[in-house]
Amino acid sequence: KGNQGHPVTDALQSDRFVLVPNGAPIHILGQGSSAPGKPGTAPVNANLVPIAILRSGPQSWAETDLTNPRPRFDQGIDEPGPVTVGVAVQERAPATAASAGSTAESGPRPRLVLFSSRSLADNVVQGIEPTNLDLVMNAASWLRGRPDAVGITANTHVALTLTADPLLRSRLVLVPTVMAVLGIIAAGTIVYVARRE
Image 1 (cartoon, rainbow, N blue to C red):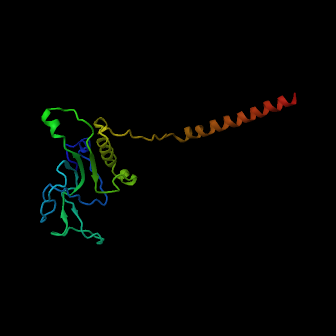
Image 2: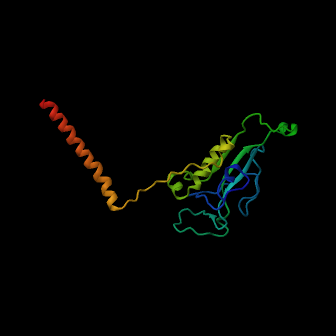
Image 3: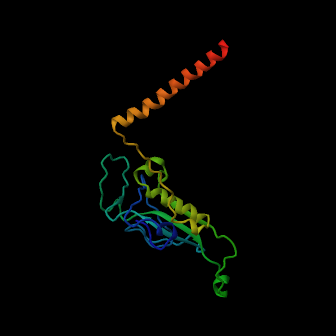
């Protein structure tokens, strides 16, 4: 599920899910303990604001034993869900602009979007779950600073199939074939008559 309130995930349909194959948990430093029994950490750079934009479902978990062919949740070993699998990071607005009441930015601020799966945008995965393409395109638009392009879905091509009865199909094949043969015969006749004269 996406974090509502962030431009990357706001435009996603609420009834669709994102497929994150082989996703690993992302732990955001400075936001308290992300795993049970582990202490919270301090942020590395207080000027950067990380926001969890994508989390796994409540019944999911982060498997620690990747060699086991039959994964199962091991209490106390595996990290229970929901697990953060997508994060957006942006630099804080300068304090001088906030104190002056200025809404205009002096320049582009650094941004980062991190997904925990390298296969998120693969064609195979997008064929299974088209919402992944929307998520990746929204992230690219947000990174470029183009909020007008966030949430605009690509046009989908619908292939139309001609369904015709057998008689019409035979006409569609025979008429052009017969016309082509007659055209060749007519051209040959014209050439023959012209050469004979």
